Amino acid sequence: MQINYNDIIDKTKIIDIRNLLEFNNNHVSNSINIPRLKLLSKPDIYMNKENEYYLICDKGTVSLSCAKILNALGYKCYSIIGGIEGIKK
View 1 (cartoon, rainbow, N blue to C red):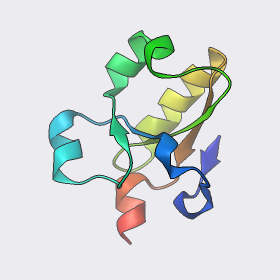
View 2 (view 1 turned 90 degrees about the horizontal axis):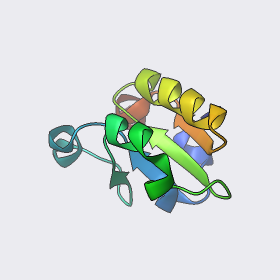
View 3 (view 1 turned 180 degrees about the vertical axis):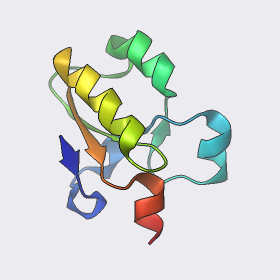
View 4 (view 1 turned 45 degrees about the vertical axis):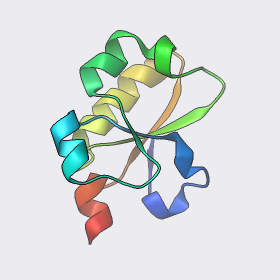
């Protein structure tokens, strides 16, 4: 359920689940911003169950819990290990 950023093949499927201000301050190129609560409340608007998605937050803990919830609903989600902070290292 977790993946290293460098192991992601299709980086166009990265969803940054932080708020818009955090996203605007620093984000991974090609990622889209869908705040966590918005994504969890209506995942079918943003995702389909055939594709894989990669969730990112600051340190990887919030995206991991979000991925667990979405996977339980039938989506294919991975949390990027270490989040934005881990990629900056």
